[in-house]
Image 1 (spheres, rainbow, N blue to C red):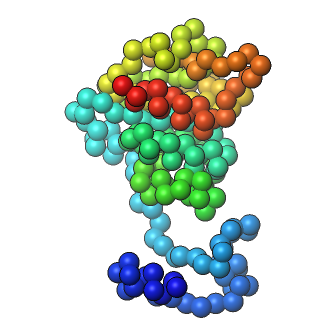
Image 2: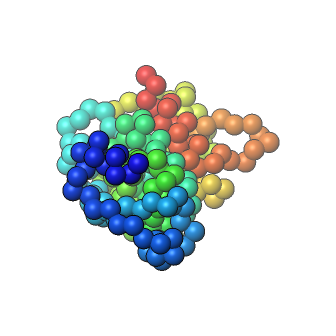
Length: 208
């Protein structure tokens, strides 16, 4: 079936090797769900923030997602999927304690990892400064903000900034934002899952 699929997909340059389960698992990360098939590929080409700024220069409407202190590969993968679905130009995350580009992250992204750049940064405050120079509005999502996202007239080039679930945005990241907004939720719940909050915010920013 695999050989037939490769032929129909016109991927005749792919070489198929039949190996034992033990040999297959030796070459895969621990706990990898492989279903008996693995593909050896080239690494995804890295993209820098400067690449994205140059690519989006002159465009009147753009979206970039900035995630402060994300550590869960499932969350990051889901955020990539939502960012791709709503047309964001890139996702930027702080590299400290961030997971690598693993199979777990790729699986959660459901193909988005190959469609939207994931940029790791040591200094998010500097990232926000660069985006401001490039005429992006830096909009922070904060549960303590005085105004809601839906009641804010946002348009143009926007960098959406979100913090880790529970702790939220760090002080310096928050201070670098041009505006803080919130998603109104019931008082019985302290915060939303990071990937869900990202999806809601992206929908709200793009629905008009």
